[in-house]
Image (tube, rainbow, N blue to C red; front, side):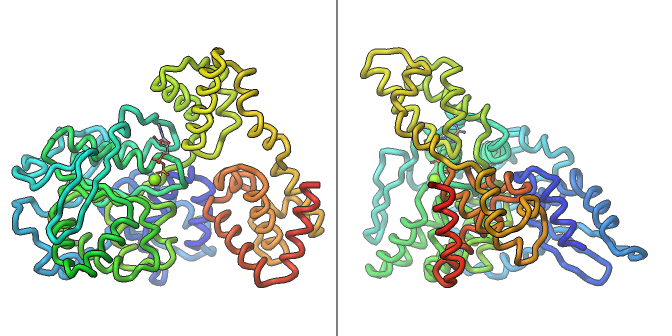
Length: 486
Ligand code: ADP
Ligand code: MG
């Protein structure tokens, strides 16, 4: 019943909502009782306000007739954190308030907008914080570890364009900026490449430093954390390493998917994580996928990541892409008419980084040729890109061809049917869509009966695997590519 209920919710809700609020719920089934554990009070309250009655409705609808299933909503226990705190975990130099869970929100909107008003009386960060870390500074660390922090000054909230796709993430980030260490901790942002995760993370860091120039804000890529740790081990300076990371006011770690498979780093990070949480120090983490889906990451870390707030950043819709282009053009002091912005935004759909790259090219041609930016100029400067798009296969075309090839109905590709005879062709079609079009994963999911982007990702991986291990699939795939591109 619960599986069906989840499937329904996934269909009904925008994927961002689903990923942010429903997916983090842990489920315990006990007879006729479905117990849902939210990672914290904030999530529980939000779910309770917005989704609970719908969940109950669905469960009732989907239960076998005559069976009365109850749904309970609670908060996950977090005892583990307290008991696992080693003596190292307490930071002797600080008098911070211990970590507290998010304020209770009657009206969730209010939490996002409350800002400074909600800030307790303790100042953040504490006076006499050890070092200032800003974009330009190189910081010496005891034990010979050199740490270069690199907060990008231009990545601020002001330069971040808000749209439906990133609204929640932005709201959460700005809440963290005004209430660090005491609201959502950690803040966990996830989503595909080039969607603004790093930008938002820096925006929080910059805001913290602006509020308190002495704040010790450390930003680093997870690979850097790993490299530093290895070095510290070699230099016999692991204690200094620990001390350094535990002395920060805010720790921003980017792209934590790179922790995958690195057990010792995960171990170290786990302890750092606990220590910072205990100390009420803010953590922000990003990842290219939902934490539970990171292979090679310890369960205890995955579950801990869910203690704060996990928010998805989705690819921007057309209007947001246009707004981003206009804003970037303004920053570059270039005049971009709105029809030209629409023209570009309609053609570059995958992510913001690509959008920026294309705009830069257009601006450069405009300056080089001393011509204003208009559609003819864009067509000229993006000739290759546009030609490539013309050659591109459409989702329709792929679905038609795959259905014909496997002698199934196109409707089966969109349906929820899971029998092998349709599920496999569906996966093949999704993988082909990823390879042959430049639609994003969510767009492809949308095109296949409104599936989630993770389903598409899973299909791509599966087919890649099968093409190596299964001769039939390999041949089918090649035949289909030939059919589609000839
Ligand atoms: P990610 O970390 O998700 O891969 P980034 O934060 O590096 O993505 O973003 C890629 C580029 O796109 C950066 O230059 C960033 O400034 C820009 N960008 C992304 N989202 C936005 C946005 N909503 N508004 C303005 N710029 C954005
Ligand atoms: Mg990034």
